[in-house]
Image 1 (cartoon, rainbow, N blue to C red):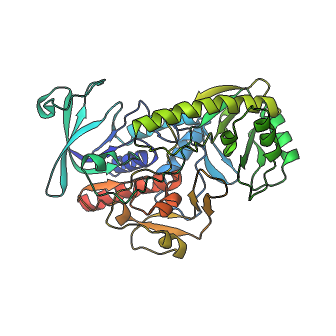
Image 2: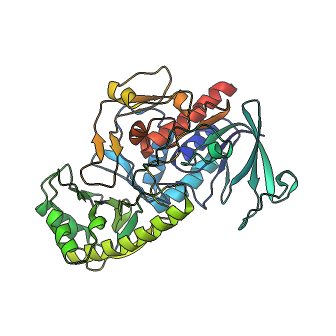
Length: 430
């Protein structure tokens, strides 16, 4: 019998499991991959975006920063502490879960859930690596599956997989998904040379920054194909398209960041896929990753041809998962609204306090939304299932309107949601 089973070992899931364990709750964390971290590790989504000075439920996040810094896997850049090393993060997360006495299971899936009277009772998980699943198998009496009894479940799977198994009510999804991305890393770069060149061609410090930290050059720059903004790199991308080095769609979104503890490497927040793809459909996912990897090769050749410092550069890592911005969203006890953000509505029990903008990507030019707001709060009720009394969600599957979710989906808020969910359970069990 566990007090809490957390399904999904990404940002929200790690925060939830660690917090629950530290609060003395018997906790299990289930992860389908062979390491924790989700978007930060598998997805290479770094850095964690700054989300305001008044964040709450960020104890786990601050501990993660501290432990990564101790082994050279974190820096503070442009007043943002969220610049992580994705590989070292895998090791630190293992250590933190052990410190909190969390029972972590990798390569594990939930196949069936027994529930009654609005309460989840038992989760059946695999004990062996299953290449093929036969739904005629008697799961309850088969040694390939293990029954896990629990008092609470937190679904942090991103796509709300537990909610799908339980046939929970979801918010309307018009199948208008935000474009997905597949991040990658290039290494062998002379960052000092590249950084010096960037500062010479772009004087917009809201777009391009370069800074030396502990002897390593750190930088960030960006470009999109939107014509309602001025981009210093625009002529370079135009020329690459003209010379057939890039496809026109390859330049729809381009953003790069350096990485803590990797003095010759850059992480790319691209390519962004302009295809209309369902992030829960395996056929669409397969099409997306193949299309993205083709674009990554073109982007890497483009960088070597046009950017100083890239003479000896090479692709050193491609993310293991697509960067999904929105998919399933559960119907919770409170459906968070865009108006709640705009008015800065206060709640009795906030799970998140943030000022991250409403950030909704689209496939067309000049149609994406990046709307800066004041500080806003997300209530704990948006993490509570409306269908089951002991099911919570945390992460991008939060109970929120489509546009409101565009502000809440970022990692800093996901950390806070996971921690808040664990604290809520502790208060109810106590």
